[in-house]
Image: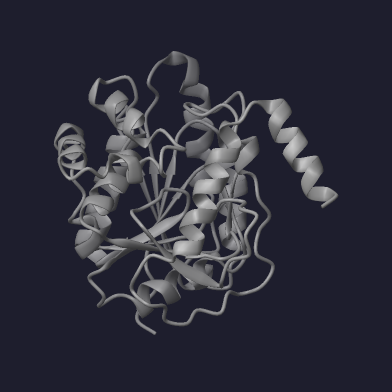
Length: 299
């Protein structure tokens, strides 16, 4: 296998979340052979300064990786700018990168899956990224499969993939509508990706992820997903900067390595439909979701 991809960890002001994220990565067998880069954003205002300082004290003590490089931002960049800058610098210098934020707990087999996926599809231009999280769908899924677009909870890419990232949300939205892809981009109308992109354009949200997904989607590029999730998001709480509740997205973690075999370079229709059904289900009123859950227990 080629040299392992560097890991980029983006942290801000939550020391306990950061510790749990790092400890999960340390539990991966490949951690000791991986280079870890931690990007620590500066405080936006005095209310989070103590949290940022606590994070910086902690990350300075991290062990268990081949090397540790800490990038302390001198001014607050915000998550989007920090990720865009960090991913660009590492793909330029190393050719590929594994990206984790400070509220993602990973399976002990996460790094193996990421590196094997990067190696397996490194020369396939159609594949833009590898993703570690999969939605808690009801349909059984294969060990791995492709979905059009890109995602953001524990992912990896190559320089050739990240070079397709388009910063201009307005241009992305225009092309999606011109090509009549807006319905498909919204998971057949079950999830508000277009609305998120419009809010990013208006400056109401500062999302790099919606632009990453749109960039990949417009180019018809594919992301490899695992059939069982290797990532769990622990960030949907009172300390979260953006999303405050992630209950519907919670899932277990793979307790064994995934067997990666080459897949046809095309979107897997059954998995896409499972995603559509999942997004449709979480849009339902709570009483209808409870009734549907009870019904599933007693078919």
